Image 1 (tube, rainbow, N blue to C red):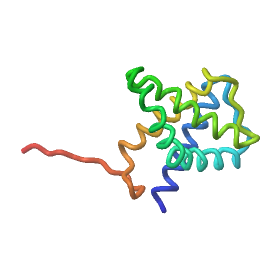
Image 2: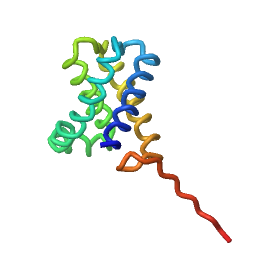
Image 3: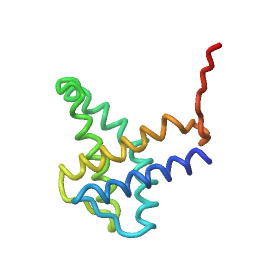
Image 4: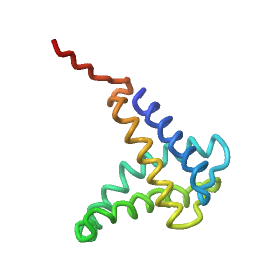
Length: 125
């Protein structure tokens, strides 16, 4: 449970950064941030694997660049589900999804699956 809460907070941070940095992404209110973070987690956990499997041939042909469009589609799907979350277009969705992905990726380097901060220290004698 703490891991879920930490990752939701990290996703909320990514969504906040996306709303500040990308002109076409607007999120109104704290409740929308919380719901968007939770929905984005569920969409990425359940819908994205199915969509990835269905679009695998085009992903291979584009050498993985189609994954940017797939991430933007998941970001846009969450935007379509919430009334206080609006995305101007595909470019805004790609940039917003990229910011959220980078934020989550950087945090995943330090946060383990149980929600604890994990740092590996290597001592050489």
